Image (cartoon, rainbow over all chains, first blue to last red):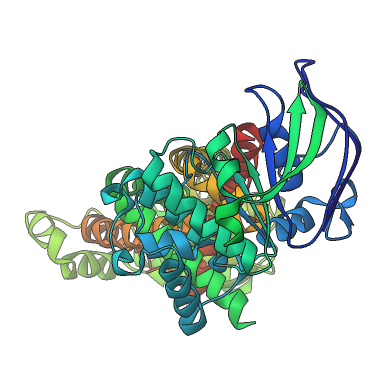
Length: 228
Length: 300
């Protein structure tokens, strides 16, 4: 699914966010990326999503080295990755359904198939009855669910989520984690950045711990709740 | 193919949505584009009409011989005979002072003035076409016939046309310059309008980029916006030209009739309209492309 080989990311101001990361992620894995603020979690996720290129080393997604891809090919690659952002990145002048439909429109889908997939995605996150509503009327948890619907509407094999429960209270966070749990069960690879221990204890998966831009730990966790 | 068409239709809908969202700014831009297009186009049409006016006189110059007021029929006859056998004269036409006065009386605008005259002040006149219409040939003939008995004055009809042509040449250059300045203004207006649209759609662009939109996909609605502005500007410019022609004809045509001149601006032809639209579309598309590319580069 994905391989990073001695990846370094250095920003123009000289700050080195990642320093020689090497790791592999297999199909269907559930991976947590943990670490303190500034450890490089978001940068790692951006590289995994093809939103940035490494300064050194290689990032291979679905067999494609992103350094060798042009801007258009990289954009097409991103079409097949579902992205969930902590700050949602939704368009508030469009309806819930229109927000969810955006990746499909970009991919060139239209008409009945587009409507069918949008409805299915909204049903999956429990927002089907609010398809015509404006995102302005949604709560924080609902906004995050809409963001997840937009991420999965294209049926991606990989979903990357950056602190998806970061701004949510326990109730909403639990509902969001249930959704990710269902994705994992359906065979989708999920990579999630979090600094919330509760999130990790709820789900069974692999933990990549980042420390100052380096991989400080690579372990497995298990959860009784998840196993049931 | 259908997906491609659908993406274009979707971009067009988004363009219209943005247009409706800020109608005042867009309308102002379209108005300025229309003026930028119609002003040089109108001037070109005016110059072309004036050029046609002087064209005949320039390409078929004639001499007008005015006889002295005391010239009798014998003197007129002598000139007639001399012209008839002159090798340098291709053809000539005689207008008696009686016929000239009758022609003036027939003009309703002058009939009253002519009616107050106690005697006919007009001279007998010969209009002569020279075999050699070069300036030197005409000048030679003018000198010769001017020396004949009872010929008071000989006028070269092409003189005013030459002066008009020189003046029109100047105005043509001026209009070229003006057209270039206004084309730059048009590019600047579309560039700025599209830049504002890109900046105000910053969030939307960021989201689209993050979830896999190509630069081409992101650029498309802004290019449509530029094209739409250009097209609307061209349509409005066409209407302004029509209105300008109508007002010009209404005011100037009666004036031209006093001098027996056909001072009339014809409506723009289909070719002219297409050229106007093509120029507007090419300039506005280029400006929009430049604007959206540079602004997106800056945003990233």
